[in-house]
Image (cartoon, rainbow, N blue to C red; front, side, top):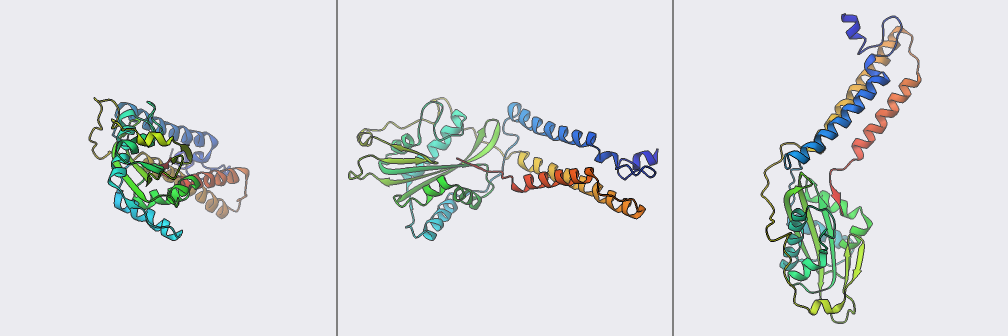
Length: 297
């Protein structure tokens, strides 16, 4: 019985067959367990919204500071924080939670420029960058700078003002930290068509729209509000990443034992199953290392 259990972890004593836990059957079981983990996470998001999520430490002032550092590196003047753009960014964040969407344009037809105009800010140029589920401020700006369209917004020479909002809430069942960054330049009659850029989606607005009185936009319907959220119990990204690392480490240990034991027995040979396992581990490890928790738009 003891030898039978031992053969799950080390090569067979007589046949030198690889450990049972390295067989394709068990690799398939590992894959099923991983899929089951992701399914459980999705189900929890639906039936217990807010239990899973990211605990972020993001500062509005740090986002603005890092943004200006990038502009200065490019030889551009800094943008100044504007209270009206701050208000517009917060209204947009609240609206995304209220209408439960992750996009520049809401399901009900609200666009970023409506939030800016509703705050009282009339612009010649405007732009919007979005981010969610990052752990800290620096990573948010780095992600934007690594995206050509978002970098173009940050390094747009026309912008003079900036507004930023950071808001926690439940989006699609998961506790989420939204970051809304809005840029602007006050209206200049010399510019025939006000220009706007939402994450690479450019728009030209009619100049007349800036002359019309703007009705403040409500975040969702009049009865909707962003419910206060508590700290999430589990970070789904950390759970998935940790599970993957444990599984890959387990397979690596079994492969190492296989190599050491067979070499001592004088029967080691590099077989197809070694190559397949090493390839699988390389692919899995690269996926874990390259995966990012945050998302930009």
